[in-house]
Every structure is written in structure tokens, then in C-alpha cells.
Image (tube, rainbow, N blue to C red; front, side):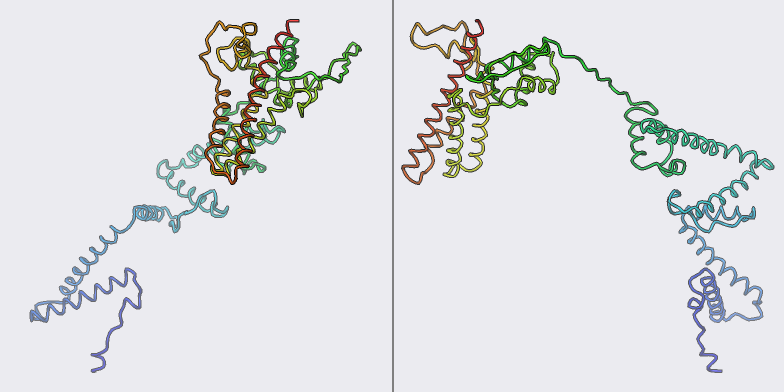
Length: 465
């Protein structure tokens, strides 16, 4: 008997788990124990309390605690769970199996079996709802509801046939632009098997840029014959002394369409053909001449003339050859000055400025020089005048303007002179050689500049005859 009294009842929660049944059992046991303890403490008479009243007391206590637990559990349930429970209650009344799971992935990414299951379930639920809304007319309303989907399927099939029958990608892109804004890639892929992501994106871009279903307007290009005036303007430019130089020896033979053979002196192009065409286009832009041809047409004209490209001006123009060599000598001196203390960055900057000045004197300066100019470096009348009255001509204008390219060249030469006096040399011989090269280089460059002014004046006088 002692063993029976001391036997500990097993914990119901360990046997039954953590469900609602376990909690209710624990609640009932606790309520019974509390009731018996209360009876013992108050020493109530057993004949005053019947078993029915005891059960009612216990039931009331259990119900109060269970209702508190139920209210707590209801407050913890999410709205989606409540809706699901309400839906399942409705499905139970119409004899449809409850919803046990919901779709958690994108419908387009789900398997075909999963899609069919959810579609079948949705149709059964909808049929039951229509049975309540419109009794005995469910089929009629289902046709109305599903008619739009059937029309969409027929539309996609029609567009698919039209797309497949077209061989041009441009027409196919127009057809796709009608669909890409209303359908996804996966939806169209079912009807157009060869549809790629690139084609889908291209159709979307076509709809945004060109328009939905609109064709791409192609600009018509017309080939126009070059006029005589356009050819003469270009020939006049390239045959000027600033662009070409006559060779003192050699001839070129040209045969025209009439069969006549012409012999002309050999001419030498001062720069490469591409640079010559670029200079002419820039010249037309500055003079606001819009009657120009394409670059390729001008290149074909140069190929027809077949001028020799200048490689060295020795024997043709010694001033230009010596001036070009002076720039190269100054560049080597600048590198020496950079190593002597001015720094690599300074040396590279001055070297680039020297190359720009060389190209300016070589190509552009001839085009800037004129007989009368308000820029003193460009004025031929002012630059060629001397102190003697016989070789002096007064300008009728003022020289109040300046040229950025000429000023940049003068500033660069001045910086090189100042740098030669500010660095430390290893010996006196190196200092003397460096300063000699600088002085002679600057003198040669100035003489080249003077020679260009004289050449332009001589060409102007030659043109009068």
C-alpha cells in the first residue's frame, strides 16, 4: 500500500507532447487537486456537497482556464491563418477537402504537376462559390469568367503564327513589341519556342524607343556627284605653298579621259594625306564654307593627284629642315634639364609644348599669315619692314591682338632659357654645350618663322602673274 501511495504519476506532458490535449489534461488535473485541497482546508461536510456540484465546480474552473488559453492562442494566430481556417470551414460545408498547403514559390517557376493541382483546386472552389451566388447557373458564369483567358490564348496563337511566318528579324521584332508589355518572357516562350532573352529585350527596347508595332524609319542616303566648284576649292587649297611644295626636278605624267597626256612638275605634299584633309575641313569650318564633300572623296582626289609625301626638306627648304632639327635638339636639352633638377613632370610638359609649336609652324602658321593683320606675328607688312625707308611699309591698322599659339611658343622657349640658368651642372663643359644648343635652337626657330612670312609674301606676288 505504501508503494501505491508513494507512486509518482508520470508526467502527461512527456507522454503526449506539447499539443492542446496535453495542456487541457494538465489543466483538469490541476483543477481537481485545487478543489480537493480547498475542501480539506475548509473542513466541509461531505453530505453538504454532492458529486454533481463538485463536477460542476471543476468544469467551471477548467472552462475558465481553457478560455483564457484559447484567447491567448487566437491572439497569436496570423491573419493568413485565420483566413485559411475560415476557408477550410467553408470547404467542409461544400464537401471539398481542406487547404493543407499554400504556394510559396513563383507560379511560373513551379512544376507542371504543381500548377495543375492548384488550378484544379481553384476551379472547384470557384464552382462552389458560384453555386451559392448563382444557383444552377454555374456553367454559364464559368464560361464568362474563363472566356478572357481563352481569347488570350487564341491571340497568342495568332501572333505566334504571324511571327513564325516572317523571315525578317525587323518584322518579327515589330510583332513582339505588341506583346512584350502585356506578357512575360515565360508566357511567350510557350507559344514561340525559339524566343530568346535577347529578342525579348530587343522588342521591349523597340517598343520604348520606336513605338509599339512601328517600323524603324531608315534614312535614305543619296549619292551626289561632286561639283566642279567643290573640286576647285579643294585643289586651290592643297596646291598652295602651305600644303605642297614644287620639286626643282622631276615630272609627273597624267593622262586625262580625252586621251591627252600632260606632264607637270613633281609636287611634294608637306604632310600626310589624312592631316591634309583634316586641315581643309577645319579651314572650311573657319571660313563657314558648308559646301564640302566627305573625307573619303577628298582622299580619292589626293590619290588621283599622287603627290609625293615629304620625308625630308633638305635641298627643298633648308629653313624648315633646320627649324625642325632645332626643335628636336631643344627636346633633348629639356630631358637633360629634367634630370638636372627640374623634374620628369616638367620635362614631359615642356616637350609636349615644343612638339605642339613645331606642328604649328609646320602646318598652321602659313594659313594665319596675311599682308595686313592685327596680330603682329601674322602681319606680313609689319614683319617684312626694315629700318630703311626703301624697305619699309606702314600699316594702316593697329596691332592690338595676339595669337595663342605664337604666345605659347614664345613662352616655352623663354622657360627653357630660364631653366638653363637655374640648375646645377656636373662640369663647365656641360653648361656651355647646353646653353649653346638653346641659343642656336631659338635663333633657328625664329629664322624659320621669318622664312614662312617671306614665303607667303612671295607666293602672293607670284599669284599676280
